[in-house]
Length: 202
Image (cartoon, rainbow, N blue to C red):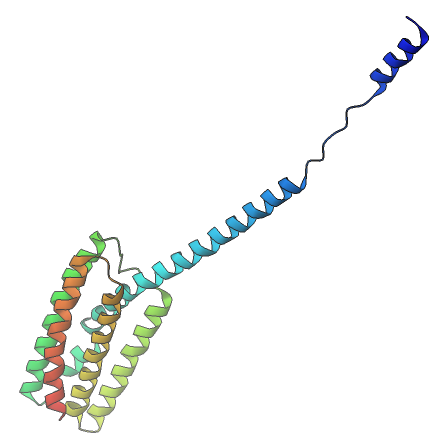
């Protein structure tokens, strides 16, 4: 082997392979794109999850309210015994019967439909607790002032009207036909009861 060949051989051996950088512009673009897609997915999922939770709470709020109105010591039940008007008590019977019938069917139907209406949020429970306290205060004041029948009819009319609005909000987002039909039937009954209380207050 001559000197030139020997030197060429040594030069080839001493050449170190050049390493490619890990973060090439292509890899960086790919990572950034993946990160953006991941962030968008998380945001969309969070929005959908929040929206779905709010939708379910509309159904839970109805159950919470109807349950409170017909509870054993509910103010409308308690002060019904203090009324002088037999007609008003008759309207109340219709209201309580409608509430009770709906409440039983609704709990069963929504449970099988995966809505779990017994699992109301703190916000729903707080609003309902405040509502019960307001009913109690109004009826107590009406009783003490000797105008319990008038105050009771106005209070009941307001509660029926609120329930109708709550039902309508739930119907706007309802996806289960059976649940929607039950709420619609309940709303139709409430509208008749609403007219009864309205006639009495007028």
